[in-house]
Image (cartoon, rainbow, N blue to C red; front, top):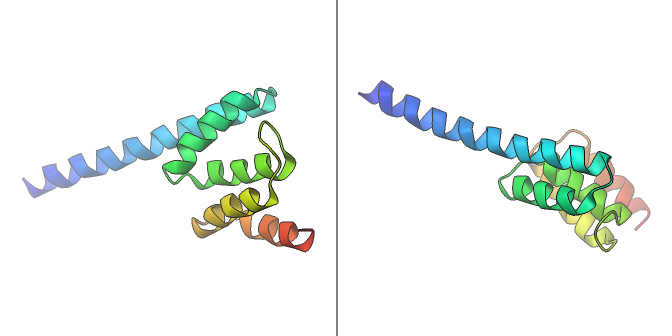
Length: 101
């Protein structure tokens, strides 16, 4: 009985992670095609679910003003969230952003 409950909970959380990954993948495809509106929507959905890659990608969008009003402050916030969640490139992006801020 306990095994069944544990398995159900594990499947639930795996499903949440896959959904966030799917949203980030759609966002990356849209971003690569220059469809920043769709990319913003997909990255935001995934980032709010804790996807570190989507958080990093939002930082890039805000840093460069792709589909959003350019904002170093917002970029820094997203880079910081991504770094806090373990994104390997986010600390360096944050450092570079602050050097030129």
